[in-house]
Image 1 (cartoon, rainbow, N blue to C red):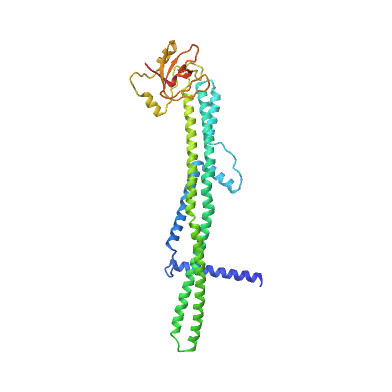
Image 2 (cartoon, rainbow, N blue to C red):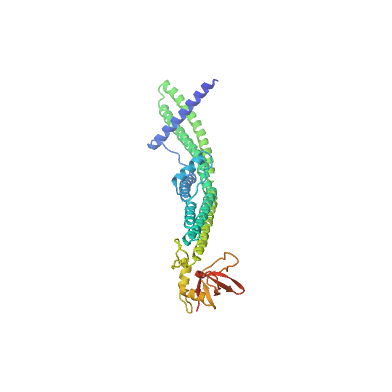
Length: 386
């Protein structure tokens, strides 16, 4: 057989099938043909799959917006991904802010209070930027990629099989319609037995009924087989939900790590700024008489400001008096302090220690004593007791 003849016949057959499906679909929409309904279980599975697809796309897109708010950057990453190339590394907003602060602090002078504070803030911002980068990488790998794999992989397979099921259903209904028409014609012609011509028509329509019945059996078998294949695929949606739940836990854990890191970085920065001298050289190298206020968390500030019997919140004058006297005093620690080196004493909030001044020590530090432990402590972390 000529290959060209085969291709033409196949093309004609495909065109006939497509036309038959189109006619059947149109008649169903117009209410002129019956439609085979899927069983309730399969309908529920199809609805669940469609719902999963819609919400997975929304969650995935909004997560991308959360991790990368810049739409231009998202488009660039999408293009590089489609080209199967690695996107160039770019500095993120916290890192850029941190670099600006460090450069400004260097320009103003690291020896000045403002310059030093800018540098410390800049270093913290850059650490936050690094943590932000790690959050994006971890979330993309453990959360976004599995969701995208479902949309571009599993669901595409489901959609393909669902379309095949729709076609098999249209073929089945078209076969039912043809059989119904053939039987109706056979019945009409069987009532006309007066002439030989009608007898020939009866034989023709009997053959048409037999052919239509055979076609119906074939299309019914193909429809049942495709319905089973689609059902098996759809039942995997429950496994997909379980997998996405694990991915969601990974995403939450990545966020917890990120926010915990940011909190710790800012807490450390707050302590560093809180330990700045109350009297320092200003940016124009003139002595400033305004002390740097210590910034405390709300919970710490409220407890430190609570008034109790025998407790006096340390004021600059009280601290100055203590620096000038040679005796020791009891002091309550306002909040935790981690020693920067071996000459300092680590502190715990609300503990009571003994403090005293040492000749030649910096004006904003006292010597603290707890049992047999001694070390320098910042006065801004203390309140004197009567």
